[in-house]
Image (cartoon, rainbow, N blue to C red; front, side, top):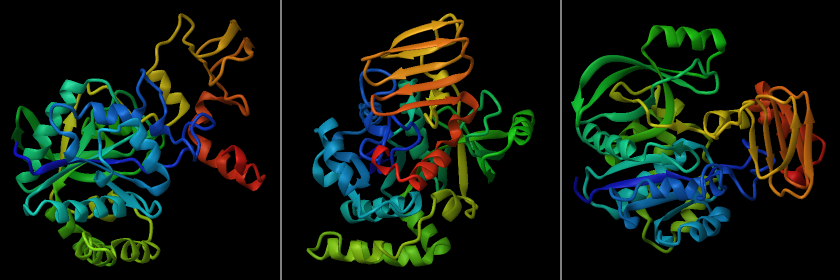
Length: 365
């Protein structure tokens, strides 16, 4: 591959999905979940060998940039694309596309859109997938990575694959029939039985000019604002124009805004990637080692009797955590908050956060 392809890491998310360990001031991507490196550091690490630091762009917010730069000082400040405030993945990706177009004058420069808060354990395979994705994108497709499902998950969206398009660097590629929202349990089981549905990873590859054409076609109001920002990208008034336009942008996801409407979308199915979006405390049971009783114990003075299939997580092991006869629980002790819930409810933290806000508990968020 040539020098006209870039990795764009979306790193502006909030900090609620692993509350109370992750919070607004320290979102998930800045924390150590698996291994000795934070999720953001791991997202950059796995690009080594295919992207120099100068071709890794980070989309985040002004409040986050200092923390991220401290974690990966090799990426210069000029490579941070700063949103005045989060507006969803569609505006964030559009902003990255115009920044890339302003920087690289090649009309076919290509961007890999990645996440800062997912786990990927099979890094060599991931790098091969990325290289194949660039070839597919340059053949004229919007490329999405689909994860081969291992169980009927209800926490992920799905992609239905259609006809075979061709082979690229040893990978089979298919046309996308449709995107599916997060299903209920019966729907998820039906998707698995059908054999043609993949988990939606939220990772994409496309040419910058191609995705901007799609913004013009399907999100013209957003596209108009993005083109105005592009015109002043290297000029003194950039910040003023960006803030003015951004305040009027409606939040939207790239899936709903573009991908569900476009017809030239290809899915690259991946197997054995070791992928997990760490979307809830319960998801850690697919990632972290279990003891003989199916428990996960992290950084805790833990004493459990007849306790099974539970997670016990302490930020500081300053006091013992003791359980008796516990089953399928999430227990998280951060010192200022003790959080306990059944594993099957762990995906509902967003509702809990709304409840805490209504109780004026914002200081713990």
